[in-house]
Length: 100
Ligand SMILES: [Zn+2]
Image 1 (cartoon, rainbow, N blue to C red):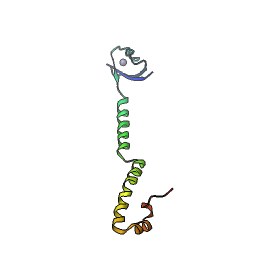
Image 2 (image 1 turned 135 degrees about the horizontal axis):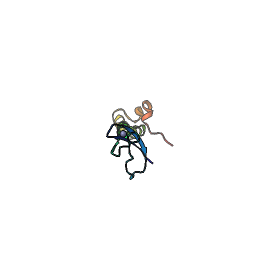
Image 3 (image 1 turned 45 degrees about the horizontal axis):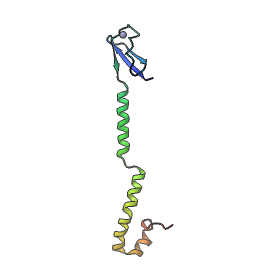
Image 4 (image 1 turned 90 degrees about the vertical axis):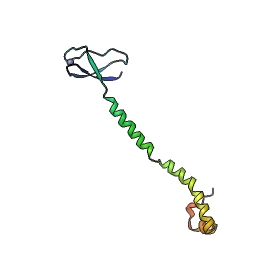
C-alpha cells in the first residue's frame, strides 16, 4: 500500500498508509477529519525524469560506435579518392575494415 503524507487544517503533518481509494484518515494529533494530502513524491519524480532526459540527451557509447561505423567507410572513400587505396591501407589501417 502506498504511503501518503497529510496535513490537517491546523498544520499537523502526518503519514498514513492506506489503499488508493480509501478515504483520508483523520489527523492523529488533533483528530481533524479535514486533512489534505501533501504530494511529496512529485519533486523526486520530476528530478528522476530530468535525470533520464539528461542521460538520453547525451550520446551513448553504442550510438557513437554505430555513427563511427557509418561514417568510417565514407571517410575512407574520400581519402582513397585523394591519396589512393594503397596509401590509405598502409597509413590508416583503422579505417580499413577488418576481414574475418
Ligand atoms: Zn491536526
